[in-house]
Amino acid sequence: MNKKKFAVYGNCQAGPIAKLLLNNEAFKQQFELVNFPNPVYMMSNKDWPEILQVLEDIDLLIFQQVGDAFGHLLSSEHLAANVKPGAIKVSYPSIYFNGYFVEVDYLRGLPGTVNQFSEYHDMNVALNYLNSDTPQQAIEKSLAQIQDPDFYSPRDVLSRVQLSIDELKSREADLDTHVATFVEEHWQTGQLFFSVNHPARQIMLEICYQILKLLNISNEHIPGSFEHLGETKLPIYQSIKKQMLTTDFPELKMKGKQIDMRTYITGLIDTYVDHDNTLLVTEVTRLRMLKHLEMQ
Image 1 (cartoon, rainbow, N blue to C red):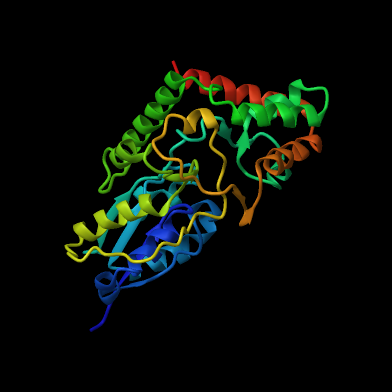
Image 2: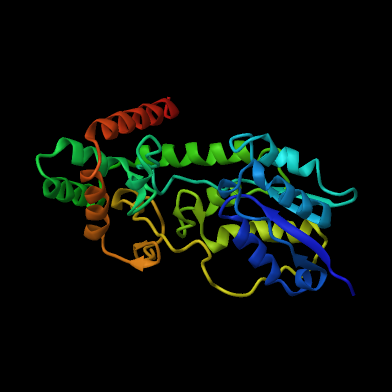
């Protein structure tokens, strides 16, 4: 039997979803994967001819909701409009949750070298660096904050979690698959994200199970335990862990290497030492203002 062809479009979550679906025996018997050139954030308009070739070849497009941030050609709306007639289209959300990592953000206003250690930046650590007399003083203060069981109040933790869940619900409101309710029901019983946009296997399985149901594939079993997005595992503050119902947390990991908390904080601060403090102040101030507005 000739297999149908499918492709998965989106960010770093697209590849793992494709691999998990192919681990389902019934799905694998029906479909074979056709790859897009890269995740969306690594593509540009010049990739459109190759993208169009994929779209014209596949029978199933599984696509993440992507706006015009990378250009209209790469938007999910434009891709869905260019699949061949009769192709099945299934949408899934950009899976993002910062309830575990309320202090984490991207420093997009600084040179790319600021991400040499990590693309994820703890705003408390950055502020401690800016407000301390020495890097060592900033390291010790940051360690104390992360380990303080009362650094964030229960009310603050729970309100930020709900804000993040509400944002996820908004993102997926008109899509074919959803994870916000699953996150809302299970975020306390086990760690569902390793960083703000790197969900654990459990979350991506939820998307895959829904896709299989939409395709009328009754056998939804997907074996295995590999964490496809587990190369980086950020720390959760003790005051946030305090609001959870589990004590089982993964070891801290950065780009595939297991590290301890002091090494993590030192790595961030060592990066800031090599950059202009004026730029860092401007970017941290901007991000803190945005966080404040989100909480209004």
